[in-house]
Image 1 (cartoon, rainbow over the protein chains, first blue to last red):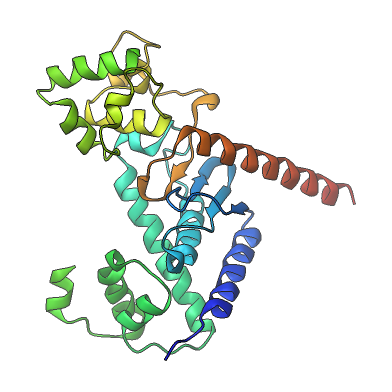
Image 2: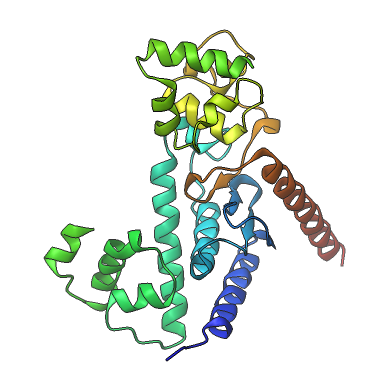
Length: 154
Length: 118
């Protein structure tokens, strides 16, 4: 059965942009080369989203991720670029986790009632690298017991 | 270009080939070799600077000191936004997005001022 998720995805995107607005984060969005990444300008509280990202399902997660960069701030806000100072990996991971939790908050408000992390991750276009974190989140918030093997694999 | 020459020189000091530097920095195929006759993008240059434990200022000839610790303060003009998971940001894309963002920031500021005056 083919399910049209575009309406659902659009509602989620609207929620995320509203969330940005409510938190004094400016945003621009556009369609360009599918390989051009979305960006966050932390200290100016501004994000730029490529809506034509090659993985269309991942677009809402990238919006949450860029919002995460701004919301989490951090000590290197005014440095040239995170990459140059070796903090990129940590900051990218934190922004990922922020996005995961933001999408989960939305999902709960929709009363989606996901019983397992994998279904949630799949339904919201969350990248596979987040599966381990999703298990952790479910364990913390729902008392869901993460299978040991699964945690080790991710 | 000086960026290519200095990358080559530091790669040698670090006992790395240019291809290894290219890979460690996560750049596209043979990107560094294109710097022979083309200016590198700022994010790519930052990634290479990190691999070679130096600063982008040294690689681009703004300083002759390869020590990265000299460069803690950065002028606003050189600030670059974060890119999603460090994906490569071509210069022309960065410039386009920067313009869009700056326009939005100006408009946002104006809206705030308007609200403040009401």
